[in-house]
Length: 247
Ligand SMILES: [Zn+2]
Image 1 (cartoon, rainbow, N blue to C red):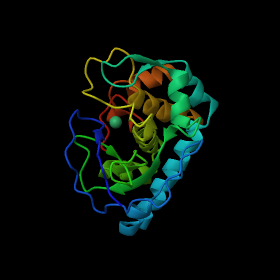
Image 2 (tube, helix red, strand yellow; image 1 turned 180 degrees about the vertical axis):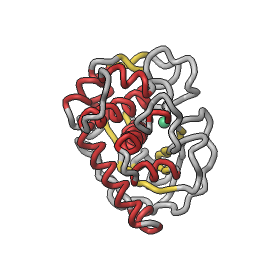
Image 3 (cartoon, rainbow, N blue to C red; image 1 turned 60 degrees about the horizontal axis):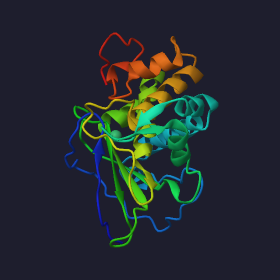
Image 4 (cartoon, rainbow, N blue to C red; image 1 turned 90 degrees about the vertical axis):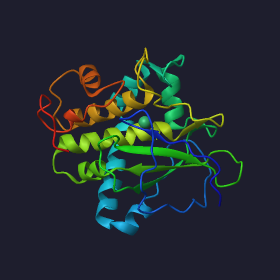
């Protein structure tokens, strides 16, 4: 199995660097695409730390429940978004259709999760898309999780877990392939005139999760703006959003 191309997009910073992977996942054997969000692969994290793999799987499953909720889908559909910095505006309904894999040619590829020893000074995770055949179409993604993200996933604090859901939903936007390309990218994080797909869907997931947990103290849209539609504010990963959180 060959990797033919790599596109890595980072979350907090505008430029990527190669994170030191602990385990490089083996390319998946089955890459068929169909409606819906494909099953995720946690085996690379499991090989290193089964406990963290279990925590992460729970977060991804919670994120999938949030993504399936009316609150999440209504909030996405109501927005005009920006796929890439300086790109043309895109309608929320189109973004949601691609995100949910409304057909076999629009949607996410299989996601494999792995981890790095990198902290979160620059990013919380990164996603690359690959092909299992030389020169072939992108048909799977590897999401590399930075340390803080796995720590948030294991935290008893619902606000920390909510941030891990933000990361999950954000990185899933980078696993969407439409017509052979990766439409939702972070770009340089500057100058985008509409809320960006990646940050905004992450923020919506974080806020809907907090709402479901009974922890949302403001309007959902206000929460999304506060968490960040153009960048992510890690200061929202603990209960007191006026302070910088430790993680
Ligand atoms: Zn991103």
